[in-house]
Image (cartoon, rainbow, N blue to C red):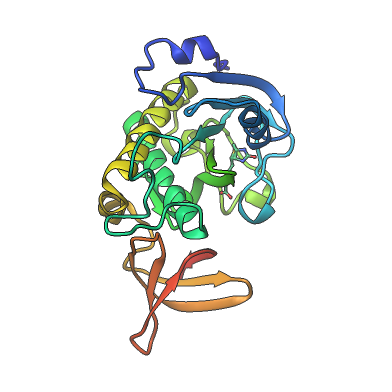
Length: 273
Ligand code: BTN
């Protein structure tokens, strides 16, 4: 098994700030919690926390995130969008003067990070993965990676979970999850993938800050698994069925329902019908 080491990761990483500080742990409750603590201690933008395994890895809506040892990438990246010396900081999109902070802003960061991770997977493995709004990265209709974005004060912690070298999943995940190894038939270097993921996250984060969300939406239209499909979106017990037609500047999924109306969905789960 290839061990993750901070020194090896940092050697010739070549990013501007993501990964300038990398902390690697054997076992933590959740890398998100460790990142929160580092943030409290004044961690710099781009600080990365990685763990071989998590005993309390979590996903969206408080779900557990299965994080077995040595076969995945369980990472959290600290970002300080508003602390940067950029007048526009992290806007929700061109033409919008509402800074990130509301739920909409987090959806934008979640989608942007999903695009970055799908790109990294493609570059390292050649596998064409797709983004399933708002935070899943899919291969052959199964989830290979997930993003959890949490706001702490004015900072953001982007949690990234990638199933890399699992040979199988427990029964309860077998129909919904897959790994890069199961899809490609080859073991994948976690070090190479972490490096590429950090590059892509930085690239898309800077793009988002400097150019807004529009160019990210453009990219996402090419690699979305839901756009153009009949979907069911659910949130807080409400269900909407229709065709997913686009993502707007707030990151909302636009669903055209039977009557022809378009409904904006800003949070929740989407399944393809
Ligand atoms: C989801 O799909 O619901 C999001 C999953 C996010 C999992 C990652 S693993 C690293 C980081 N630490 C956590 O506890 N969660 C995220």
